[in-house]
View 1 (cartoon, rainbow, N blue to C red):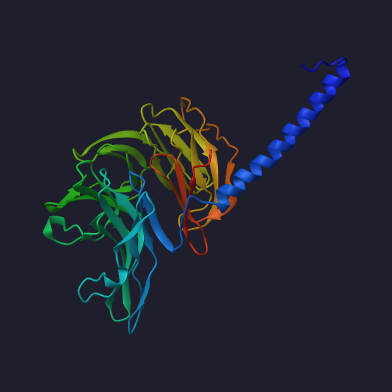
View 2 (cartoon, one colour; view 1 turned 135 degrees about the horizontal axis):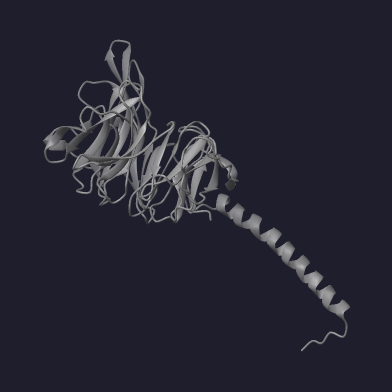
Length: 382
């Protein structure tokens, strides 16, 4: 036992302890941050064009591949699958992916997994040579199994033409997707197709939409509807995709993109202009908040208390930040309601990234770095 004979000795010891703890904290934090950047859990050292986590944590990703013909330089991306143990196998060899005599170039734009994690839809941005010297751009979607075997829809083609933002319903057989009504990507209509029967025709016939996002583990989606003449305000709708029922959630003051339903399906967020993000309670739509964060791409944290925001639009590089979502108060009117300015919390030391996503279990953050565009996986920053 140590005995102190004077208060001066006690005060001196407390000062020494404070200095020691301060120095320890200063040393510890930078080391943790450095380790996050310099020692990722995984690194796929390729030029990545798109990627997506499967429900079980596997990663589908595409790699840019260029091929040459006598007249044209074309892009035909390879598609790969990385298992949870790190092993990788190629599902599609781009230079062997052809459709008869048609000459076309494509880049994989996005992946969409089936609920059971066994089927994949790869959204392709294609440029086809339709006449000598004339090209035509479109979105097409390729369906295949996680073994790499192409899915023949109704025993026909594995490609769905004019197909954007395709998604699987809970039966792991029915696909709902957008078809462009007003180009370029201004208004869409819904259409169906099925693995067994093939194309099944339109859904919500006669109606047009700007955007939609699925509610996980359901056959429902939240969509932004806009009349074809684009004369009325955008309206937030809950759509039952299989039953083709709908319920209006709210009339919006504006819509600038980014529609995203939270993992639980209880909240939805979207940009009403190039500066302001609106977050709304789907069960109580008059409860919402507006945050001035700047237009960008975002994903929800697993507990839905924050969003991770890339402060740049799609296909552009920007830094990542956490934005805390406050309580959603009841609003009598959207007119003159306050717009909050949250304090962003930098992630990964503020380095610029091109694409990112959070794994379904909320444990990992995957980012595509600019420049070489390799895919790097880190533990999810807290």
